[in-house]
Length: 139
Image (cartoon, rainbow, N blue to C red; front, side, top):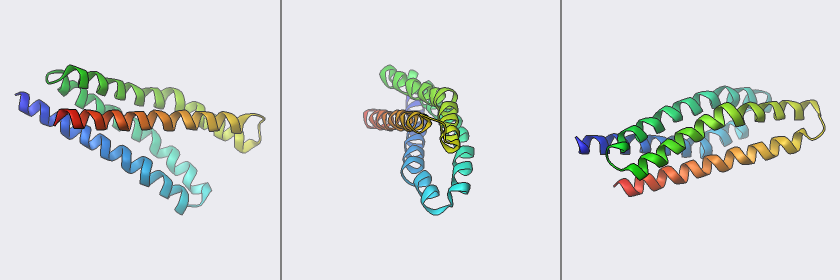
């Protein structure tokens, strides 16, 4: 049974890692590079909630399976899952509001958007690194 749980942990963490790298490194930048801004912004806004919820579920699957194999890795994956929930329900609404305010020309909105976007990107990088470390340690 331990081998199965290890495999589930590794497959889920691998899917999560690959998905995060593909989304952050290729998908989102290409959308903004190849699509007109008036299309790219709503498109990415529509994708982010799905990305966060899907990533939360995949990280939780990895965390749950890892509980029975390696508690430190399980804790890391639970923290990664919580990070996605934080991004989805705290950072994302504020970032969208700051972006919209920036587009309207509201004072200070550009700085708020830049700060929130940096925080979101930093969190995503931490999650990518944490997931990579789990994958390396679980081999």
